[in-house]
Image (cartoon, rainbow, N blue to C red; front, side, top):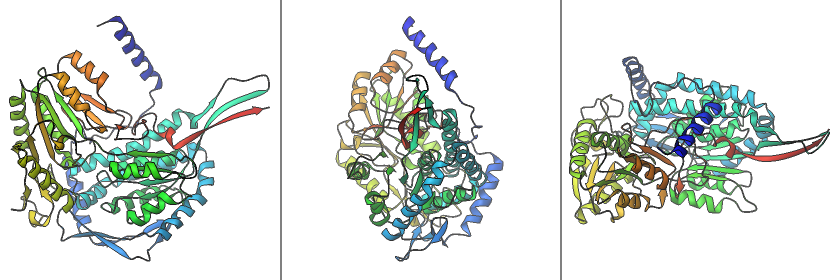
Length: 552
């Protein structure tokens, strides 16, 4: 290796050692391990029975620490596992309700922002502890609400607590982001201070209803902002559990307000109301760009948006094919491919394509059991709703019309019961097969984000062709490579247009980020800020700099 590269590695190691902060113990259940112990299983199964008995419960929104019903009434949310089950009833938040939440957040902001950052951290760390204490019940709600299996649900809840802890550590490490500058002269002091913006609107998705919602909210709260929080209407109970943890931890009234309701009322009011100082959103490119373009009117205001991906994996002729096949399978079909980080396209060297496909199909056949998400053997539960099933069937039909070769799956599942005790039949839920289809790389399914367990594969002639095709996308979130050739790996990292990158990762070709270990954020159409969640630059985005010149 050239001397220059060795020197760079030494500098990186030295720098990492210098800036490292004490970390909380990482929970054993992560997206990499997904290891659930027998004791975990026992507690989870008990929680499933407990939550099953609570299905159909009526919840409320919370404004300024008080319950708030809605003049528009309630909506019922049915489980994607079995649509005969109503999971919950929530108020349909109105514009008036949202205005009340914004007023409460504005009134709570001065005291919360003036509180010493160490006091804020203490409250938030207590909330992280409560989230872990309640993890089995919350994971059970997650199974009924969005269909997430036990291992991935428990991993998500652990990640949620770690997100809070990591952002608290960043605030602590930077001592509240107060930085003395060079003195301009005798008796004069200058200092840089990062100050909170005010009220943040937080709009969260359903696929990671706790981790993404809490990550965004915790970044805002630890920096001293107050929050109006809109969870997805597909996952309102998890939104309630977030509110409950923060309230029980001692967060002052009005600092965090829960507002469930339609995007046409709650979401629209949050975007249009002048009392919202900044917005953070995770969801589709279409809605994210609409917020980005239209939120600020009178003067610029921050918008942080994470907007999905069409994440490629490159498998070269020099790859460990078994490692690549398992990594692609896990990244493509974990939580039914309903992750912005999911691997949805593969470019594999034609010299090894047949063997790679053989191994990938074997891993999918042997590991990807579709069924009731509360059961331990289940790898894939249902997709989120009928619209997702319809999109899956449309994509499968498009692939067949184009002469695509289905190597696995491609159908909705309506027959049988999946050997599950809770799902009366597949016909009552939104179940599909994991799909693997070989298509020409020019097909539109290599460009369209489906958010489904639908993987397209193309053979390529060279590594250079694979890299070019991988970059030919409006998105730039995650990407992975499998190669034993160090030069190919270096070229991949130097040229891939993605914010989250992996090489030779068996645990997931494009998935598995973790707070403080693997920052998560996208380029191009995948993100607006260039500063990733889960990473060391995230909290600073929720503050703005004030330079102070003080004459003593």
